[in-house]
Length: 151
Ligand SMILES: [Cu+2]
Image (cartoon, rainbow, N blue to C red; front, side):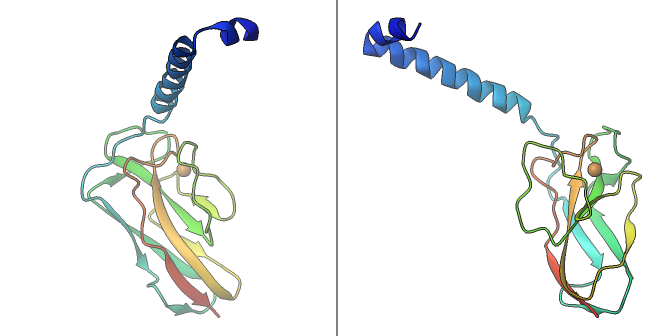
């Protein structure tokens, strides 16, 4: 098989490679088909504010403009559920679902607030909306990342 390819005129090999590459590109594009988010959507953290100092456990309140909140698994257009990223610096995998662990909190019941009890020190908080399958929207609906200090 390899010998046959090598024996081909160069033009033919290039064509073949191009065909294979474009098939891969189409496949990954189809796989990456994302749920669209409407224009002018805004996710934002209502409370606390960037730079706040909070004492002990606190309520974090989630804001969302121009889209609705629903539970995980519901694919109603223009709606999703909140995720709160706590001290997450690495970018999310744009193809995969939002991870679920102590730093990636899912609010699949449609919650718009949560009580956080973080250890003393500086922390970052950022909201990102996920679709029915916990995938990021296109374009992503993500809040500004805020930094707070717990004491
Ligand atoms: Cu989720």
